[in-house]
Image (cartoon, rainbow, N blue to C red; front, side, top):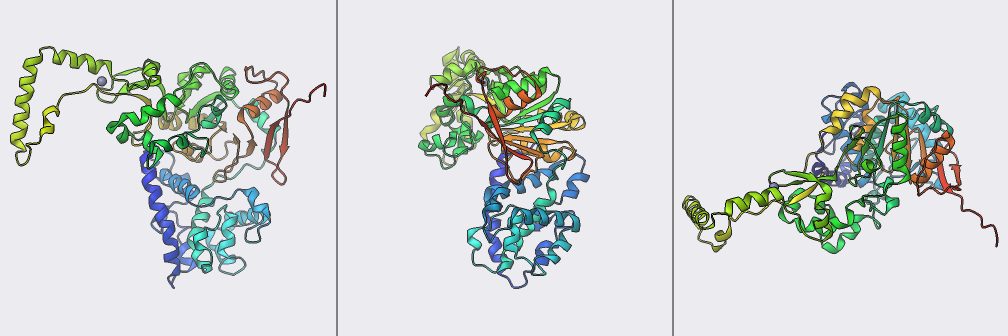
Length: 510
Ligand SMILES: [Zn+2]
């Protein structure tokens, strides 16, 4: 569970390469669908072009202790999404003759589960009733452009991955579909896990770190970084904290305001229904909204505290905000104090340090007459860093501890809000929890790598306001107008997918 985020990037690169190899492999003559797929039914993973793909049955039997396996599985899935074109179920409808219709897709997915992958492939691709290229679309994979014009067996590798992924997905519970089902679930549940991401804070103007165009990353282009993630890379920070601090003033939280969605989570807590809020956000607004520390896991840390990268001295985060806002690099008071004491008998120290260098010089004698050693060991006070989790740093222990030893047994409803669930560790929560626990989704857009029972799409502040109205709960918040009216449209052909919109108030007079 404590997956190091840095691994992801390396892994992504590997998989991109692996996917490019699909073409080479499939052009070999002995490439048979059987070779690519035989692996899938066997439990312990198959190297498909160098990837370990795990079968769902293994995940379920590994009851939650080690979890290295589900990490790997998660990585494959997530990278899948990033690397390959992902098709939403609704796109299947678009009348593309190269793609399955939604009904066909549903039918193929059911057939796969009923018959198992071997039988499924025998009756479909091997029997020639459908091409692998088209069957891919039933598993939400868009055939990649670089394979266009290739023989059909070029798609076998991807199809195999798609089948594995499909089998590892939780199956949607058929009896929860409507908004009223969602409201009833919320009213009846006693131990709700709420998973939150950037989408719940964007209405305060807090940039979403990942979204293109509006996100923070696009603001970082002017810094000339090869990869904007470097801003949050611990090694980059150690080398040059200016990079992080040049953007930090744009992301430190405005410590006053919350959103209606934060208020909704707080309301769940007040009603004794909140088991845990796992947040991906580092803005610490959950705390401002009154979520109790014991019910809150900030999976990527937060600005609530800051620590010295040298001596680990920790302060409340807002102590360094004035420096951040002024564009200064905050230094550690403890280190400064210690250095002052060390420097007090100034001349003596200098001599001693000179001697030390001589010794050093003797030891590494060969070519050490460079001038730079002169100021080599003048120590500096450590830089303070907000306790947000950078790439290359371990995630907070509290996450897997709480999920495994506390929440897993208790949870009776999962509400995912404002996150596409593609980033560890939050992305690991859903597949980890028992699959019979209802899971509902509130966000702007659907995701296709998780089967939620109910999708409520739109601005999450609007969705929660409407849920509360229907539950007869009072959700007071300055950003919710008293006369707000919301319309809900159920997507055609998708009884569990609903779009929420504010009805513009009609003007009384023209
Ligand atoms: Zn320090």
